[in-house]
Image (cartoon, rainbow, N blue to C red):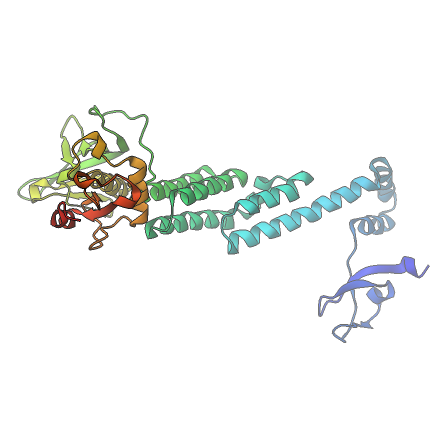
Length: 375
């Protein structure tokens, strides 16, 4: 009989949990851990709470007892286990969103642990909407920073991209959050030279072998000699050959070779040429992204120059270019410059040098001209 009166209790002072006689809930006793005299709190299971209520509610409890007989104790136990699993899942998600970073192992772990219990990850994550949104935006910005640091290889970028998109789908991101994160992913792809050309675009008659990287609604700002400004509405295109704004009211086209610098400020994008008349000014919705695409096009444009290579046999294969670019860190091996870079044969092709990774290096145009065909 004494064993039947033991219940699960908790000390209100130190939080210790254990089993004690029912009298410890009704009368003050000394806690064996903290030594204080307290009335223990009764931690009732769902079954205990049910039967305790049944004692107090009379006929209503009798009806519930019939339901218990219908569904059985197993269903009540499964319900209790599922309820505890929900609490564990929410606690784990909250800790992950606040303190950790995206991880394929984490997604696989929570899926294997909790989806087998019939718990929907997106439904439970919806209760943590604010920390989840902050987490995804933080991870997007972190990926942008990694891309800008130059420490993100193509393979690592693809892995991060896949993992972040898994998070967006698995935890039920809103369309607004998904759009914001996808924009950051697009920025990383552009700044790490992993951008994908547009397959579909309208409003531009592309030239032969012209690749379109970016299209965005824009306003062309044209200023008079008095400083007055007039705007013309249209679309801005960034390609592998030029930055062009075709419009019925006014057009603007700048070859990549004529662009000395690109700047963004507020909602403005500036293309700076050799003279004031060669500069262009645009108002765009996302100047940072437009700026990144122009810089991306310029990097690729300057990379493609191969001084001294005349025939197909002299051309450096694309896979060799990529390997050399990664090895030399995208800068001149002589002076560290990052502009007007060219692929140079260490042993000149005319003297038997091969177009291999070991015999090709990155030089800026100035250093390459100084080197000429000398070893």
